[in-house]
Image 1 (cartoon, protein in one colour):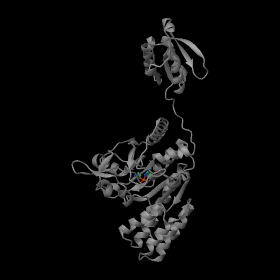
Image 2 (cartoon, rainbow, N blue to C red):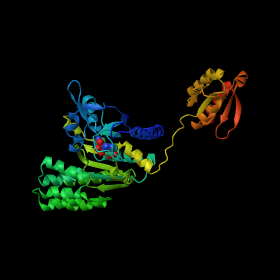
Image 3 (tube, rainbow, N blue to C red):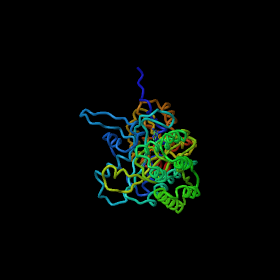
Length: 430
Ligand code: HAM
């Protein structure tokens, strides 16, 4: 029997892990530049945390199980609900706005395909207690800053506000469950399916046409004028439009004007209440959405006070895929820089000592652990792509010396034992 990993999961090997760690580190650094602090929540939570208000799409995809005590638990499909729970448990009295970020895996039972996995990683943040549109503006600017810092090109940030479509649905007296269904269809981008769904509803045609037109609206600021004309008599929609306008102003002020207003964004999760945004990299095809977020009222839904919250999460695997596809250069450190090679078995312990000293000085170092013959050791060091080999020979040692070989130039020099750390620190760090 050949053992296989579960469908929709992946193993990551050395080179890929180094790239992922670099990207993770860069994202962490940018989140922290904006004052976010990292938190960690459990991989599994009570199932009800996600069924309450995460939306049908997500709840259908949840991995859930009963533990030995009969509790209904779920592997987290996302992290906003766990962070809202954590806030209610421990942070309600903390000074606001509260800025938290996280990096961790999520699980969704869906049909695996390129960019869509059953275990995937999210790097995201939640800003609790900020006010629209300033908080939203900073959050979106942060997302863009992250991608710019990684050197990703060709990404598009699409921004909308759910209050516009919700305003129309409310005016047309569409029930809340039907609104949820409509938002889910809009999220899938299925215009025909939406029209079919609306056909069976007793709604004035003018509303149906308005919805159809609105979800297709995309462009720069000028889109707002078109919307204004359409929703002039709808106070909820006008309020949302003004919010959107304020947000774009904030973004323009920080020099980020490369956004696309898109009123067809509905988001697959049910807790969003106003501003929403998604980031696309079109080269990724069907799984082009590398990030999504917006303003939500989950804390209130969970029984807390009304506190405005905004956040987003990068689909980390999709960010990696986009970087690979665009051939973005990722500056990776060397794995091992120095190999300490004992020329003969009797200097083995001395080699261990030298390796230890180099490691203490912060230089990634390897030495022989497989009892290889000297010639094989050199080709092993070559395979490791080290910059330097320290040749430890009995005769050199008698003179208190070792030979340092530069693997690029092939040059060798004798170095006093007590200087070897300084010399290699200078060479590798200087
Ligand atoms: P989401 O859009 O469901 O939002 O997921 C965020 C990102 O995770 C997506 O944009 C996508 O890149 C990635 N993603 C989702 N499903 C998969 C999958 N099966 N395989 C690979 N990547 C995937 C949320 O989860 C919200 N909690 C974001 C948020 C934070 N909203 C407010 N705060």
